[in-house]
Amino acid sequence: MSHLGYAAGMDSFQATIDADGRIEPRDAMPDGYRKTLIRQIAQHAHSEIIGMQPEGNWISRAPSLRRKAILMAKVQDEAGHGLYLYAAAETLGVDRADVLDLLHSGKQKYSSIFNYPTLTWADIGAIGWLVDGAAIVNQVPLCRCSYGPYARAMVRVCKEESFHQRQGFEILYTLCNGTPEQKAMAQDALDRWWWPSLMMFGPPDSASTHSEQSMAWGIKRHSNDELRQRFVDMTVPQADVLGLRVPDDGLSYDEEAGHYRFSEPDYTELYDVVKGNGPCNQERLAHRVKAHEDGAWVREAAAAYAEKQALKEAAA
Ligand SMILES: [Fe+2]
Ligand SMILES: [Fe+2]
Image (cartoon, rainbow, N blue to C red; front, side):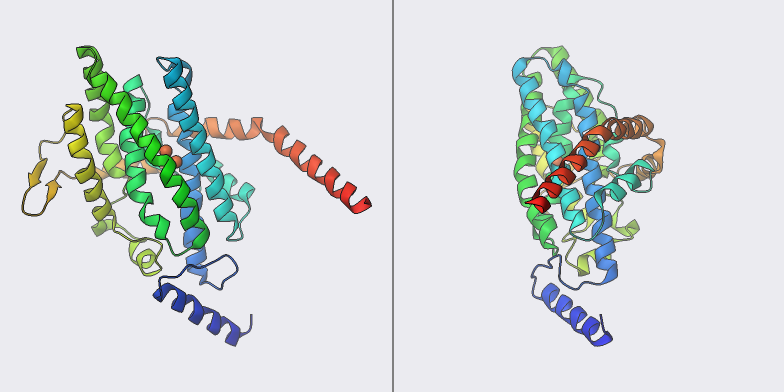
């Protein structure tokens, strides 16, 4: 692109951002904007597919046929979310195979929450309720992200996430209205998943490095701490309905502010899990790499078929 063409492209990019419009794949965009989105969308896609593992672990052990069918649908949805998102990343000029390589070699991350184990059936409830609940809080504002393909993918993803959140809540509701042992299992799951869920919103604003530029570009609409607060405000009343105790002695309702006050999670744990030292990091990645290798024949067959079709078309 000529210098003049480049400058005009950047002007029209900024004008679109200022007018709260959408940037589309063929539009000019700053290199940093493209790179930021590729990284964010790819890591989001990785989180969706790695997130299938902790729950997939329970499909064969779900307590009834109904629960099994629901959980299978939910885990399949997550695969679908991964597909939409890898496709959205590809509109920015990257190849899906390369992006997957970055995941498999550990160069790109996925949400740390999926490095925790699912020890009991109640964990499946807690994941749906808390993890998908936190995902909704994170993703609803992304429906207004300035990059069109990402924003549009999020609309459908969010609808499915709200089904996931309710199925998790319903699992816990059933347990909480069951035997004392079942209720204790639900409480134990909340005790283990509460703090990692709060950490899903990322480091505190005071330590967040990418936020400011992403806000200016209309990729991010709210700060990590704002979203964390929104999640706590939404979730604590739901814990009350379940009759469960949020494991935070510092939790209280601030009438005047209309918000719950809560304790800070231990972010050193977050940084440690991000670095690869969580309870399941190695297991998750090894499983993913094996699934990718086991699926090589499918990719090869699809490519051979496409080639054959193309030859046929060329001949006709
Ligand atoms: Fe999802
Ligand atoms: Fe989900």
